[in-house]
Amino acid sequence: MDKLGAMRHFCRISEMGSFSGVAREARIPVSSLSRGIQALEAELGTELLKRSTRHVALTEIGQIYLEHCRDILSAVDRAESQIGSYQSSPSGILRISSLPMYAEVRLLPLLEELQALYPEITLDLDLSDRVTDLSRDGVDIAFRGGALPDGRVIAQYIDDNTSVLCASPAYLERYGTPTRAEELAGHKAIVYRAPQRVLYWHRKIGKEWQPIPMEIALISNSGNILKCALLKGKGIGLFPRWTMEQELERGELQLLPMETEVSATQGMRLGIYMLYQRSQYVIPKINVAVDFLKSRLGSGSPVPTV
Image (cartoon, rainbow, N blue to C red; front, side, top):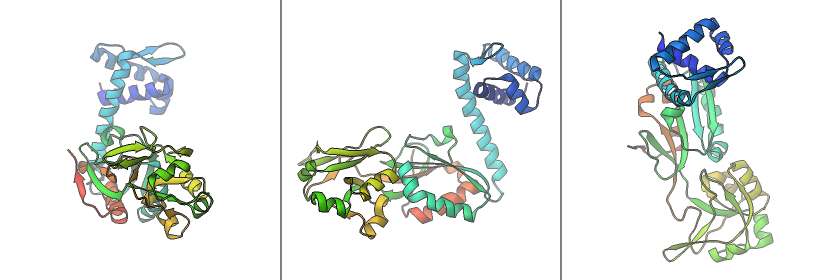
């Protein structure tokens, strides 16, 4: 029995819910496909699929086996890709996962430039706040914010992610310019939604952090939506400086220095990191992408995490 082949067919059947559909896709008889799955079940000593005339569904143990199959097949595909691509030119699908705001503001223009340099690379871009396991999820490069990430990856420091207060001149002319944290209580806030929680603001009094009661004008995890609201004078924002560098230079937004510290993360020093696996760096498409993005985005040293 071709066990890897049977595992691939099992995964596709679970996705499509049809033996005949997978058989057509694989260009094999339905009877051959069915015998392969039966042989797999016989070797495992358990039923993986419940079959009826109209529907195919996973058994409980089949669902567990499916997750393991996906991990195994993903590892096999990565190994074959690494061997096959080792001495070839940069090509193939490059899977990048990024925080939505960072992708919108900083990454997308550079990815267009990367594709112009390496036209045989196809980008598969996932905009997501969720924590990514590079190996499990089949991601080549990920951009994440926060404290130094954990995991057996290389973490390249890219940007300072500490937030600063800003607002449009039109908003400040209408509502006044606060200079102390306690004055923010009378203003409207434009707030970022992080993966696990909304980042409400706090001020530091002595060694304690206290929430700032403000009227919330908007909550979003989209950089474009938040920036648009800021530029239209909908409220004050507390965001990393990289999100609005050009608008600050043009005078469309204005920094608001405070006498006391204001933070959405209660003073934690944060960064943006580019993550990639050391073992995958030898693959040409990943090698050139990492080097290009490193040269254009960050000057920090790569940090191997363990």
